[in-house]
Length: 478
Image 1 (tube, helix red, strand yellow):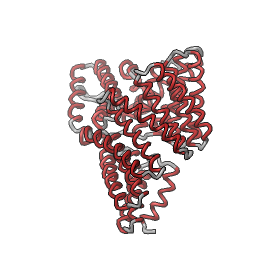
Image 2 (tube, rainbow, N blue to C red):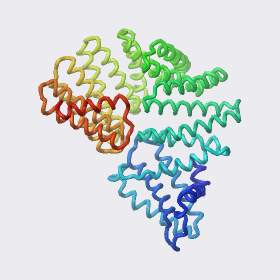
Image 3 (spheres, rainbow, N blue to C red):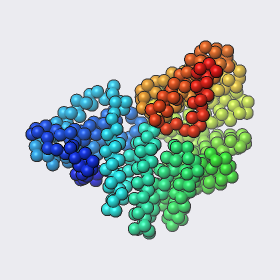
Image 4 (cartoon, rainbow, N blue to C red):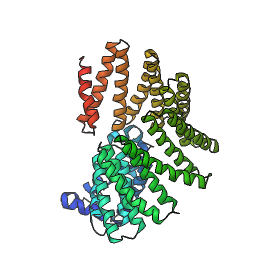
């Protein structure tokens, strides 16, 4: 990316000249031409993104690169000082509006322009591994914005580039690792599109490469962890395919790697945390098979590890969140066992931690969403005990969080989905508690939200498509 913005600004000009030559017409002296203004708007979009949502650290990197692009562009201008001052003044004035504009006001300049330029560069035989790696930043950001189609195009370009590098340097471990990362990203995007079979193919291809690299470099912790990640992912995908044997085989192999590394250095918090992740997945697998005793054994180990991590570094809020999730899984097993009092205690521990974290940073959407999940768990537990009024109270609190998150970022498809699901849940339980009028209100809101996503052309999974028709019937009183 630094290469793109800092040393090749002419590439954007070349692309513009091919498709819109009128953009490159010489502007009157002392003014900015239309293409200059377009590039400024690109920088403005990226700058606004840094203000809009703290969940995406890669955005800050994009902004810095855009700034470098503009500085280089300014240095090439005839009147360097005037150009730089115009750039800085324009950005500063617009950024004053960032807090209220957020991403809802952004034109897709940062996507279309960057995609066009990166695509040309990576498709050329002289593109460097660094250039291809830079695509990963954009892929992650676009995926976090739920722009799956654009991210997919970038991921395919990245895969082609890394495949070319491996062909040119078949014995280079770095090139092979790059290719495995590209396959991993394609697999993640396949999951986003609901293509689990495709995701499994990509994940297996990545695993094959990583098994080879790990076998050749058994002392390399990075390569060992890469293999661990691939095994975990394949285990999850196998579970999604209801292939329980395949899930157990891959997750157990991943657990063996994690156990070995965690035992080799008990002070290494990263490996201890990875071990907890591995045990958590084995617990979930046992839970899906109805083996509640094994699930509880795994989840209790997870809780002990994470309690130790929190005790060692009480200021690490991500570990606090991880401990909260461990309480959630323990509570889930207790609920399945009919141990409602113990389940409620665990879910309240979950909610208590997330209450504190969410209160410490109200702008952290991830923590707010976790808090809503804890409320859902308590609501489901109330339903299991026949307490529909208590369930509706919890689901209403969850809905309030979902509405706040959706309103704070109207372009975020994941938050809109959370919102319609929240409406659905509330409508269903109002209907069960003989409140048909109120239920119809929530059915309609659920339908309007999901239908609005589809009308805007956002990705809607096949499963959600089926819900849309059911919601339409419910909303119309059927």
